[in-house]
Image 1: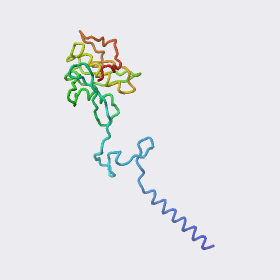
Image 2: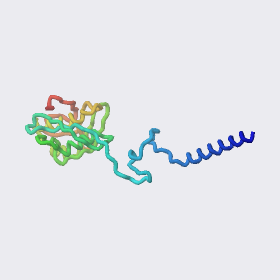
Image 3: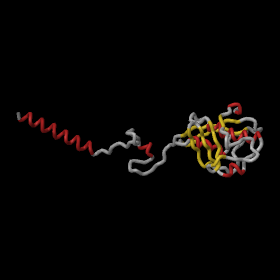
Image 4: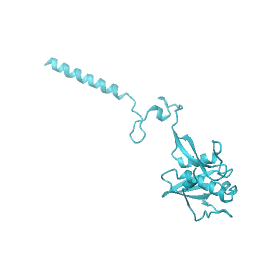
Length: 192
C-alpha cells in the first residue's frame, strides 16, 4: 500500500511540475480570427521591435494609349499588397507608363481623391487638375476615359465607372461626353 501511495504522489508531483512549467510559455499571437500568425507576419521580432519583411505584392493591369491614340495597351504593374487595389491601379495610371510606346492618358497634375464602389459602379474622384488639363478631341478623350474604365473593370466588382471632380459630377464644356448623366462600361475593342 505504501508503494501505491508513493506512486500516486510521484505522479501528482510530476503532473503539477509539467503544468506549472507549461503555463510559463507565451501564448501564440493570433490575428483576431483565432488564426495563429507567425513572427514574420507581424513585422515584429520576439521582443516586439519592428523589422523589415518581404512584402507581398499584387499584380495589376493598367491601360495606356499607344502613340497614335488608336488603341489601349496593357501594362502589368507589381505593387505592394493593398486592401484598395482599384485605388492602387489608378495611382499607377497617374504615375504613367514604364514601357516604350505606351503614352500616359491622365491629365498632368491630376491627383486621385478616392474611389467609392457601390453596386458594381466605381465613382472615381479626381482633383481639379483632371478637369483643368483634360484634353478635348475625340481620340484624346476616348483614350483618357477608357484607360481609366478598362483599368477599373479589370476588377470583378466593377462593371461601370462614373467620373467626379472634388466629389461632384465631372462637367467639361465642349466634351464629347456628358459626364453628369453618363457612366462608362468596359470597351474591349480598344485593347490591342
